[in-house]
Image: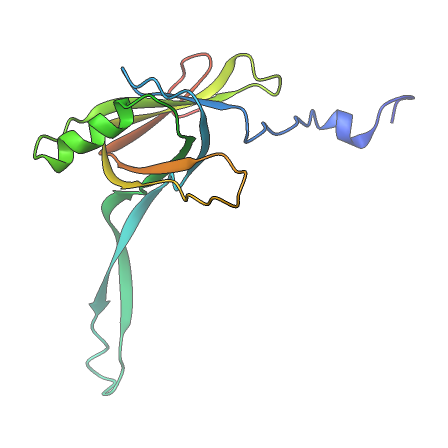
Length: 166
């Protein structure tokens, strides 16, 4: 190994991005203090079917074959500091009143300095399915935190350079 080099530098290891550097873009929604985003995911459900046992071996239970089934996207819970803005509330209430308004939402992960996007996830056809009000306590000094749960139809991940599936 050359002088001054380490095994780690030979591997070109990269520091992971920080989970606290993110921003959310929801059309005309103006809440800018999203504090937490959890639950984003995608799952391919498994369909199992039994392949019969051998005819010449009574009692042979056979085995199960597994094939891919429907795709399911995880609900996302967003937590945010309560402000005087009512745009998230109004968006949720439009659904409560029978007029769900799906939006395309972008979640951007920022570089470790928190300045520029390095990766993003686009939630296609998202709408608010649940709202939870802030816990209020006259003895506390915490920020009032509300949460909203989003469901969506599709998820696309792109890198900062625009490559899909990065």
